[in-house]
Image (cartoon, rainbow, N blue to C red; front, side, top):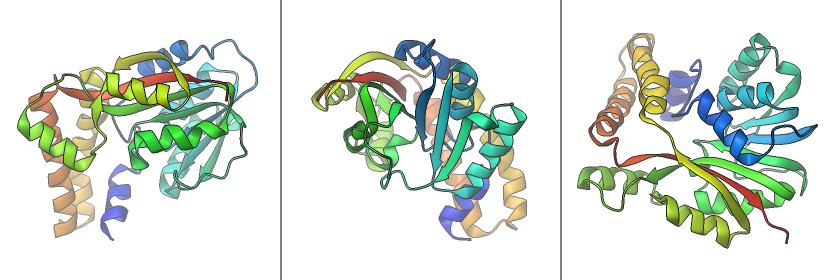
Length: 251
């Protein structure tokens, strides 16, 4: 397996592929004003194994188009959706986030939890805007500095891994620049990282390494993941995912 295949294998049966929580998805739904509306069409971009898509399907009168590049994640999403009784409300689509072919103005909401970084925050909010109906909702979680200053090792790591990491005020300004009205923002609490994502990930390390006979590439992946966990535990006060909810302005 190459590095990407190993990464997919490590995460393929996970309930979450990044920090987040059901309560936080529901809070974003509340901020969006989508509750109570009927026959919504929502695109969940970079849906992974379906944590947010399933919550959206259970919480709203909506059909969810769940998009991810990797079929293994979508297969797990479909299994979880069936178990949760919402399979008829979710359509899984294997596609690249930066090559979406939806019709213009076809969705009431574009949703993306912990995935917009794959195309870049500014590029994503600009490119996905055209798929929203007038007044449509954008809801994304994005790596965000919680303070104006931070430890050097944290700054070095995330600025190298994702140069668009910035403060919430900077992200809000980008939303306004690209034709949105911000409706709400909150930072994910620590349990969204530790209890919901990192601890279950650590529990999979042993079986993953055994499956791959402790191959150097598998060990390197686990070491990199553990290094990120250690970094977060040292500096959780300075960084998180910020959840941004905004409404599309008329053109």
